[in-house]
Amino acid sequence: MIQDTTTLREASATSTPPLNVEKKPRIRLEFLDGLRGLAALYVAFSHIIADDTTGLPQALRSFLTIFSHGRLAVDVFIVLSGFCLMLPVAQSADGHLRGGVASYLKRRARRILPPYYAALILTLAVILASHAGINFLRGGHDSILAFDFSAGNLITHALLVHNLSPAYNMSINGPMWSVATEWQIYFIFPALMLPIYRKSGIAAALAAAVIVGALPHFLLPSGYNLDWACPWYIGLFTLGMTGAVICFRGGNIIKTNARTGSWLIGAAIAVAAVCGAMEFANYERFAIVIDTIMGAGTVALIVYCASHASEARERHPWILKLLDSRWAIVLGTFSYSLYLTHRIAMMKLYPVLNALHLSPLLNHLALLCVGIPWVLLFAYVFHLLFERRFMTAAPRPAGPKDIAFRAGGEQAQTR
Image 1 (tube, helix red, strand yellow):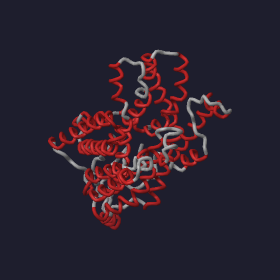
Image 2 (cartoon, helix red, strand yellow):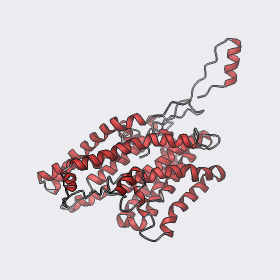
Image 3 (tube, rainbow, N blue to C red):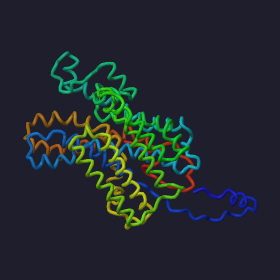
Image 4 (cartoon, helix red, strand yellow):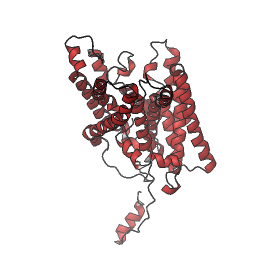
């Protein structure tokens, strides 16, 4: 909270202490961390538990399909990114980025790139250290990883443009494709969406983003339309921006009555169910529709939770209590590391499990009881070594509303 400068000058002139100004309680949106953490855990589940259900009883296979839609969690990440990066803009008087575009890009690079490159190098090291990697370098042909060591693959990953190539998109560490897509959106955000927002409002910015993101799919032939990179995520990112504007229009956090809140949470749950059903039916055919609807549902959930964030904790709805629970928030603090490294951790565990020759049921039980804890431990250690030091920026004066975000603002992790 910024004190009134006139009061301070008058107090200095009369040598009397300034009046004590009661500070407004800080509004904490810690549920953003919890939502991000649960989404990252869901991605890990989808890749570890639900990737291969061959040999399992039909009832169990049907149940595990609940965890087989990891792409929907990526939709959540993108919306959260747009929401968090738009928060300081939505609260500003002029709609500009704090410190300008160059400062914004520097902060984004500091937050995203060091863990990304550490995970990239670690992935390559694990591959090379494995029997499959050594056999590949010796000219063997039974590499279980079938890894592509071409210069094009390595260079595009280093430049975060591998997502634009269908050959390189998933070739080293699959989840990294979305990091590249999001990195590119960071540049589009100040170049396209913000200027339109300042000139014509958030609705115009959202419309432009949805159209621009969908154009490659509808204008370019199959095989050249960049569907594998999901350019329509530009629209999802702007949906997140829209949520920030809704929540903090005029600088004050939104308040909803019980009826509006029920509609919001009902919409979020219905959207998740519809998207899950549509993806199960045919994701490739409905990808743009599914992701966009999922993004809208995520915004509804965020707005609903934000509208209750300033209330006493005992009055929080159950979904907010879940998302801002201690364990969910802790999970959220290293969710980017979890997203980047869960595949790396499993590279070391799969050979061990394969050597035990377990039945499909016992193998999945081992993945659940051993694999998930191992992945979480691996990700947390990686977070301590390569991520935590880059999570905070230089301190700055508090804004006029003194709204605190454990996961908010431009310091947020956006995976």
